[in-house]
Image (cartoon, rainbow, N blue to C red; front, side, top):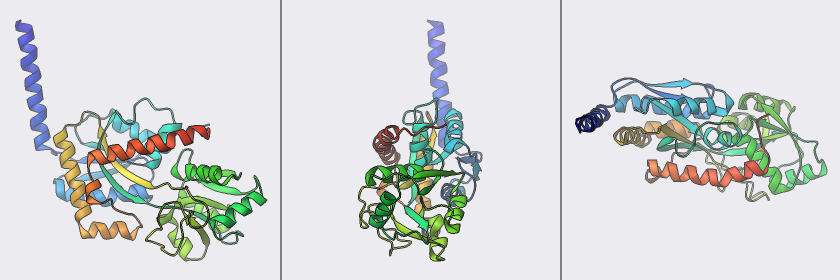
Length: 324
């Protein structure tokens, strides 16, 4: 009985200590882990947020880039981190949906993380070399069918949003083309601008400059609605190819078991950042959309994330997308 009583007392004491630590959180710098190199949309999300969260939380919020395996290395690091709120994952569609379906992982993407909040999202669109003989989705499909297996589609990583977007386009259009895989969006855009690649499905904000500069053309937005950054560009559905709709969304996760009080403080810091007009402008300037305030909850990120996995994993698996 004495041993049992001691064990119960120790457990109560530890719970009390953990609760006190959560209430005092944070007491040291926080690291936002990004699974991609600096300069991309996910890194941009993290850096804009980190600056504001530093002021809100009273501790330095650091962005650490740990690229590799489409972000799964970074995700694995956070999954194994102490559940104390000091190591967080800024993930996206590629990291947490596509990559988890094609890369070998040793954790459950839905059960082994705590959701904090949805972050900003951006559009994907079909970008083509400027002399491609197609100006809308209908004309692109006709050209692809007239040249089966000959077109080169610029893709970024296996299982990425850019890759799966093209797979979905191929399936829905009944066409066949070759994939050329690049290490990142920048070299893919370079080859499109130089005419070495025919078309690709890329993040709109990253390619707006080359589109405005007349170095590439845009066939259509892979979404239900047009993009505010280039409202003159129709959706693929408007151009004759309905159904290709893939949003490049971002989210913030913590290791499983992170105290609710810590999750609540982190969520409040994200909400405060998105309420700041200066932050809103910075995201708008790079073409990103901030979620409505009512969607900035841990529960919303979880439900959105679960729905995306249930939608896209069957498509990815049916297409036989694998890491070679």
